[in-house]
Image (cartoon, rainbow, N blue to C red):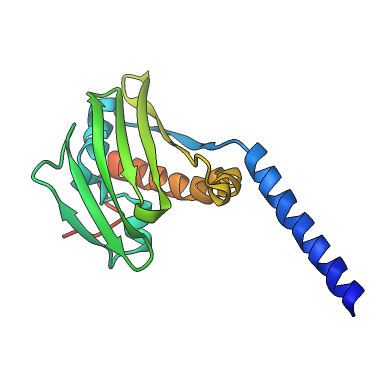
Length: 184
């Protein structure tokens, strides 16, 4: 019995050491992105992303968590626009537009409370006079958080399907005017 406990302790210690060593080697930065071509001019699509209230009409998370509570700041469009959310599925956090270049790009800072911070960016590349390629990107840095580094390995597969759903909702809204989500 004593040998078994010793062997189990050594094995468990070795697995923990391996977990720590691998975690330290993993990249701390993570990223994910998706793109879609929308048959509408950039000037039609851009305001649907640049306005945080308009985003609620196509947001994949609003669709997943309709009970989510949102608190708005005085500014809801363009640089400085910010809101915070709290929901049973979405958890809690906040998002602020930190840079907005009309019909070209939007950059947001995200704060997921205990889960950390990240950045999101939308770019709008004209394909023709009546269509635009929209790319939604997400990135962050786990620093020395080993669980975050492991989580970062799967970030694209975790968030990618949500981005695809959100971009499809945005496309529908921009092309037909039909919102996916009912918002107050």
